[in-house]
Length: 156
Image (cartoon, rainbow, N blue to C red; front, side):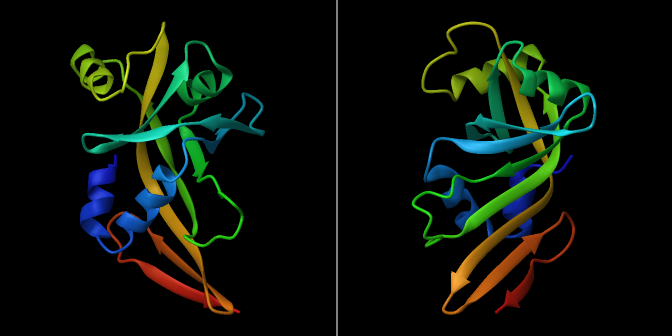
């Protein structure tokens, strides 16, 4: 599983801009897969805990049940004011539930306050990270996949 730390090490010029997009706003959009295979979108918060990008969820929430059944996800950063001044970040990968007691304790210790009740927490393994920015009169799309250099494409 490719961690956020792996991304940071392999794409040191891209990681800060992507992190900034996810830290600029609290709420983002998570896409999961329903039992039927149809997509489901849900609001979520993300945070880097140790080497990993993580999400938490209320206990029994449908997005958590989706991820437990099939960990594939897509995550889209909050677009903010819509100007795309700092870009548009998207991440895809596979989520794995954090269940080991030591890892759960580490996760909880990084939270501003403990969850008010039972919850699910997931580590997000990365398979692709994309940042799209407006550069003058064109789009600059930078993408990264584990083990590959950052690729850049310009579109008019």
